[in-house]
Structure formats: structure tokens, C-alpha cells
Image 1 (spheres, rainbow, N blue to C red):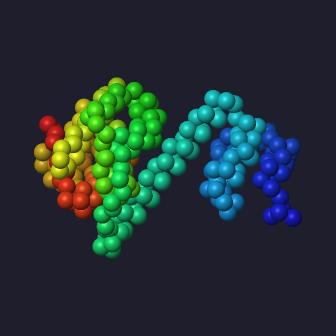
Image 2: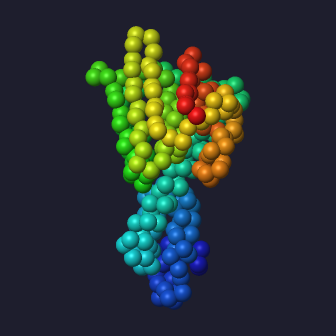
Image 3: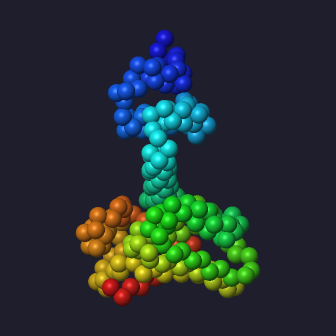
Length: 238
């Protein structure tokens, strides 16, 4: 009988019997489990109403906002990691191939700006994008282009201090598109620059500051860029 109860009915029972003994952390744990399980369908639509009801019972508005933001950011992080690992596994199996989709780079960059909006805001960063006036289109696998730009932007955001600045400039000629990302981050020593594209390698400054990361991003970027016959260069004053 319990297995057949809906999540809403379970919440009702919890409200009547355990309201005074359940902490916000308990609710968050249950809510995350509900979202990830999804009831066999889309978790964002199946359990969204029940989850909102649950957090409204046990949390005030400020705490709701904080927990929802934390869950959203963690879900984004896990999604990015899965995307990276999928492409890396294809590369290791020699099954990574170029694509021929027609991609509007402006739209893709808009999507990434939205994705990183919270991270940029939390550090009060100034993020500028400089694009040519003409429409920017390339032919590639959109997932590949997204992974390259996302990892480069994510690195810039992670290693740039609060109130810092990041600029992304795109130039296009008849044969290629050049993307240049500049920030005023913590810098990289000259002896570490050649090691940046080694899998799992992380510079000493990142380890010492406990900056999160897997050490896979730049190696993945290099593999994808090389697949399309491109090059990637990193410069730092140290």
C-alpha cells in the first residue's frame, strides 16, 4: 500500500506527523531524491509541484531560494561533467568524429552566458562579449563547440577573483573563427603552461586554493579543437 502512495500523500503524512522534527536538510535530501528519480518520466515535470509543496511547508522564502539555487548549480555541474566524459570516452574509443551542423555562434554564446549568469553574479565579475557585426556561423557538432567554449569560460570564471573581468572576443575570416578569452585571474607559471592540456593535471595555485575541478576540461578542449584541425594557445604572465 505504501508503495502505491503518491509523493503528495507522503508529504501530507509528513506534514501531520513529523513537521516539528524534520530539518530543512532532511527536506532537501528527500527533494533531490525525488527530482533524480523522476517517477519514470521527466523529473522536472513529474515531481516539480510536489517538491515545491514540500519546501514551502518546511522552509521560509529565503532558505527556499538558497537551496533551490544550490540544487540547480549542482545539477548543472553534473550535467557538464557527464557531457565531458561522454566526449572523452568517444575520443578514447577513436569514435569521435567531426560534425556538419550549421551553428550560430551568437546564439550558443548567449546560452552559455545564461548558464553562467549565477556564477558570474556571485563573484561580481564583469563579463564582456565582443562579436563582429555579421552573423557568425560555423559547421561542426554543436556539442563539441559547446564543450570547448563552456570549459574555457568555466576556467576563466573559476580562476578570476571577485570583482574581476573576463572578455570573450570572436573574429572570423574566410577560413577560420578565432575565439579569444582574456581574464585577470590568478595566472599560470611558465613552467606549468606546457602541462595544462594533460589529463587530470591541475596547477599548484588551483590545488592550494581548493578550487574545484577534475583536471579534464583543457585536455578535452585540446582534443576537440585538434579534431577540427584547429589550435589552442594559452598565454600568462605567471
